[in-house]
Image (cartoon, rainbow, N blue to C red; front, side):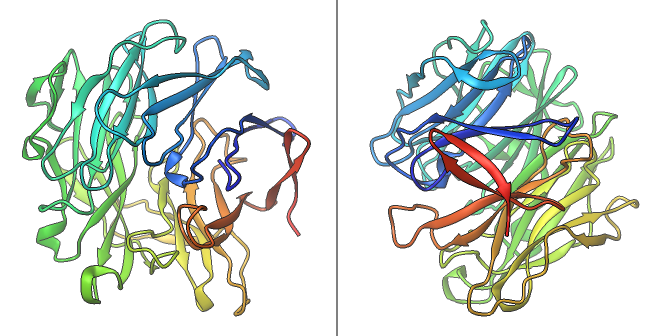
Length: 390
């Protein structure tokens, strides 16, 4: 999604490194990066793109399906469904489960957010009625699902809860379970009590809160790993201070919290709680990608890795060093593509980022980059074309 209200998709060829980018929709009125498009690959290799036009009065989840397998050149008509609960639908999270396709999403905002889901039995062509998923009095802002074999894992974090924490649970055999396998309740029932979920990290007890959940990945043995940040507050109202990258792993009997990875710096824009973000490597969750503030308000993307369950960390820079004082470069939201072959382990955006909503203030002007060969989007007719970054 870009600041002009376009939703696009890019295909990367692992054989020759070629890229192709096209527009899927140009109908967004609210250029808010909470709209957060998502991609799902169907069993027949056709693609689904989900997006929302987040803003006041927006209740629709939109989606489109590619006409051909692993081909982004042509798309079917835009379909949509409406949330019956409240305004503002965002954060689509598609995940295959038990022969079906589930789409989890948030409704509401940061102070009244609930999570819902719908089930598709025809590969994403149509969806059943809206189902209640999570409704916590203390507001569940961010939830990440991850499917591994016969378990569907979830990690939850909320940086504004009365008891700020990161929590985990999973769905198996029709029931929700704590991390150790203890049954919580039927998977058909809405979750309403966060204390029934396994506590991964207690932000209140640490004194450095609130934590924010960023990613959830299982290793080859099916053990979940999470990446999150904690906010060390140093100013009035909690708006100042800095963010710390953190990591945790389920070892089969308990959650192991690794040592602090790195001080990430302050907020990207002049907006509280908007740090640069984290991502676990989708093929190796002992590697963490982080947006880290360096000199002169520049932000770099760094890779941090551990071979001792988080006791120690080593790092390397993935993005070029910046020396500019007058025009610092911000880099944020690193994402590790699913199923990468180490030739494209992480991508991120770079550029100017002053506000999450382009219609307010100066907004943002960013481009998508990858390691070693930074690139940017350029429009050519109805297409988005990758070109070398100068």
